[in-house]
Image (tube, rainbow, N blue to C red; front, side, top):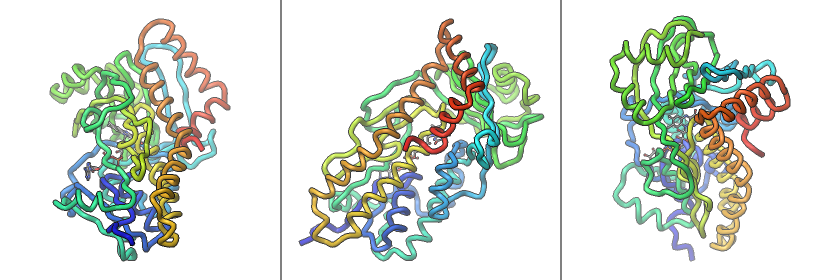
Length: 385
Ligand SMILES: Cc1cc2nc3c(=O)[nH]c(=O)nc-3n(C[C@H](O)[C@H](O)[C@H](O)COP(=O)(O)OP(=O)(O)OC[C@H]3O[C@@H](n4cnc5c(N)ncnc54)[C@H](O)[C@@H]3O)c2cc1C
């Protein structure tokens, strides 16, 4: 006899939890799923929320297109220029060299979130056994009363209620929207300064309005957050240089603490962790959400393979085995993405002579050895398969 009210309970209605629910239901509309969502039911209450620009890869676009969840307000990246402030070594990657329409896309977090909510609502209309709970008090009981529990509670570094393996980089990211005099359309800039990476990325607001992600020590970031606009812009100009002309305006400055927190084991008997609930990364390589979406897509494939089958096949043993297979199938992608991001976050912030030299050589290698450049770009765009 089935005493479980739900086959699958997904805990967390951020981008990864929403996408996981949508892919499960798209593959199997009869799926008996509960989504516990701490966000309010009304989109209007989220419209003013998190406005940071997120870089999504072409691989993520292909995945989100399958559920009509690609936001219209998006800026495409055609070129990425990587350099070290005041030192040798630079690399330029272009979409032509890699034979792609775009190297990536910049979208505000809230637009990704809202588009996924809309896509899931459209799928919900044909999903008779799907329950989407917003801020209910019986969340806990329903969660336990599920055959399989998917943790997608996400969270930011130092704001999560679990800490496992990882590293505190002693860095914060100051993000905002900046207006410049003379930007090149569709070009992203990543500049490694002595304090950390400084990225200036296209936005959908127009070619001279750019998303800023400026990483530094928490003290410097806090100090810059408190500066008046004119002083902030001149500090930014000094750190970035004059390649895109004058920095004219800054708005919507916010701070995020940065670090790596990840689980070595992402499944137990009938529980599984995906997205930021499984691994929280430094944004230097723009990989956190891209990796989380791949988690969600592959988990949905595995879960629907059991729960679309006959009742007698949904045994605890089979659920556990399927989750273990999922964990094995994610190992290479997780290890490579976590390792590459951790490497970049550390190497690009050290300033001892040999490291500066090695960093310059690495950038030169990316620039002058096409196979290195292509391999790196493919990892960034599609993850490890
Ligand atoms: C400054 C910065 C820049 C970044 N840039 C990039 C980038 O360029 N590219 C990229 O790929 N990634 C980037 N990231 C990472 C990216 O933001 C995350 O990887 C992504 O948001 C993870 O999505 P998620 O759904 O797992 O978690 P979240 O986005 O944190 O969403 C989790 C949701 O679950 C809800 N929740 C929490 N607990 C519960 C609970 N108990 N019950 C119910 N609901 C709950 C929360 O309210 C939230 O809505 C960046 C991160 C930072 C900080």
